[in-house]
Image (cartoon, rainbow, N blue to C red; front, side, top):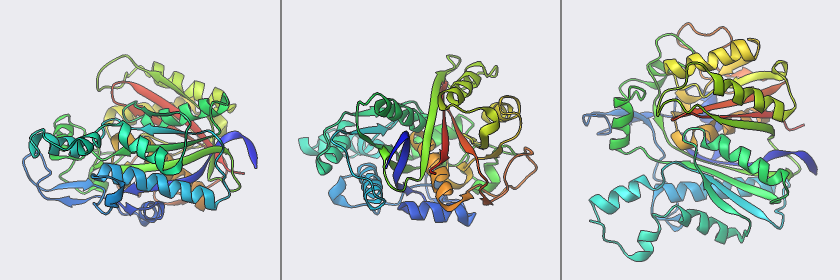
Length: 385
């Protein structure tokens, strides 16, 4: 079956909930965050609440959790797509959304190996290696590249994939978004930035669009999609999207919202829809005052105050370079199950904020991402049928 719209035809996931998209979905609808306490990961060596990926991967997929997670998520997505009626075209491309790769590997290389490794083991640290190995495994020969736009990388890669498909550059795209960067040093610096919160349970600390929110718990994820116009049973269609840049500050969102608003307006226009068509805002929603304020204003002013609002970051943690992808996966699985996987609320908040898992009504989802440094990206998702 051929469609004019790019669709997600297969999903793979490795998250703090476990290995597999089923673990992600069951975790989201359980109402319980993925984070648990990790000794020694806090800023002063104390315990820290983190949604880390467990080291349960296949050593044949690489030396690190990063490589193993990336390959496992991609393999699950491809298997899933094939089982749902997708057949690979002649030109299958690969887009890997990533901000910093092999953090633990480089840490070990410098601190434990003293910068001395066998060449074949050293090459595993290169960002090209997991991409190359995945292409070799399946015999794909389309274009392959990494895409990086901080926390908006997943949306950026989806938009790039759609451009590839719309221009007949490829027949299909394997999308992977990977971030396994929770070393004690990285956790410490996000806490020092005043946005990461590791000293309290996530639902208490991270309250997007609610009173008393302190920031976000840190998370990890590898998410994969098969993106195509062909497939018998897609999860969700990607109607369009847009990107912009604030050019304002290395960490802060421009409070004027000029470029955020432009990004949303252009995403709707590219998708051929209007504000009234949006039923859900799947927000970046990190629980920080500046981001939540901006996205709430987008809902109230640009979208007419009508869509329902939710953010899964209290559940999955903020997965940094993989954040947008895990949140799109949550929305896509939600369309499949006809449920919105919103976390429970714990305090007074925005009037359109959903409180817990909710039956899905008809309509579209706008997925916004506000990446550190001013990267804005928005995509519009629609039911498969």
